[in-house]
Amino acid sequence: MNTRQTVPERLLTVAAELFAHEAFDAVSIRQITSRAKANLGAVTYHFGSKEALFHAVIDRVGSRFADRFVEIAAQRGAPLQRIGRIVTMVLTEENLPAPNMILRELATDRPLPPPLVHLMQRNMATMIGLVREGQRDGSIRDGDPALLAMSVMAQPFLLRMASRIPRDIAGVDRSDPDTQRKLVKHVVTTITRSLASSPGHRS
Figure 1: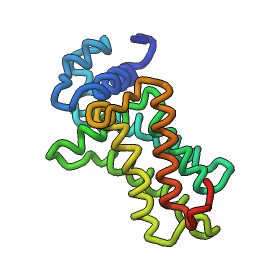
Figure 2 (figure 1 turned 90 degrees about the vertical axis):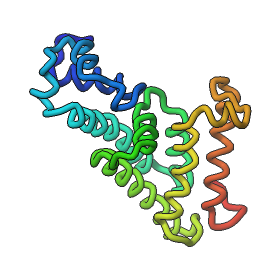
Figure 3 (figure 1 turned 30 degrees about the vertical axis):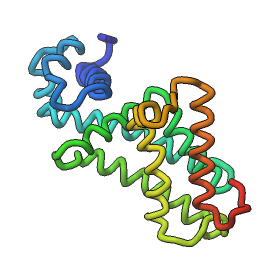
């Protein structure tokens, strides 16, 4: 732990690490403050509550994730190519705590935290923009851009968030580099072909 950070920064850093691996209810304020080398009342003092700290963590890590979406969407290349790059990023980017947090939150009965809703809406808007761009230039088939974007995002997010499904159900071991490359190529090809305006159109 970098004690030269301010107390709020240390709390955010530690909380992000803990929430990346544990559910909200499984992480205690004492765990957070102890690892952050902060007073037990620091969370309440700086953030108001553990829930508010959790929201701040989602906003921090989620913003970085959403920034990667925007960065890739702004790159050169055809819309289908950029969609393929985003799908690849979701499946391969290391140290990506946001999907784990999303999966756990979706599995609870609690209302989705506002920062998480904002994150998902922001990523969806980026994908919708790429779909519409492809529809304008004729490379992406007709259809409701929001529904097409949702279909694009569902597969890589499911595989990333529920990483045991490929291994335990289909026998696909993503820890093997060659298998991971084949999986990523398969997912990107499947998604881009499903979007393409004609079977012969290449991403």
